Length: 90
Image (cartoon, rainbow, N blue to C red):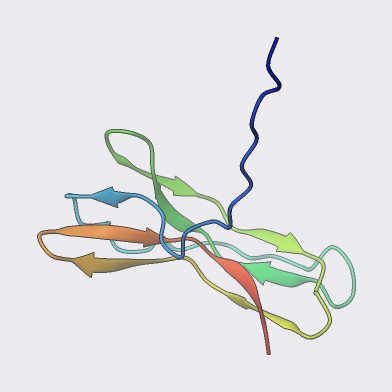
């Protein structure tokens, strides 16, 4: 019996590629932060195999030394490429 090979690689800088342009962002009601210093992560259009779906925003704990880079869709030839939101060093 052979051991299974497991490869760990960093995520690519871009997510999925789709042909359909994302709709305009939806308005969100942000409300009151659940605790002092909470960071609002805005909602965005994700992709669900055949269509765009709205992913609601959420509150997260801040990460010292980091800032939130929001998700975005970048034009790529005749389609669009998803760049997921992520924490990045300041």
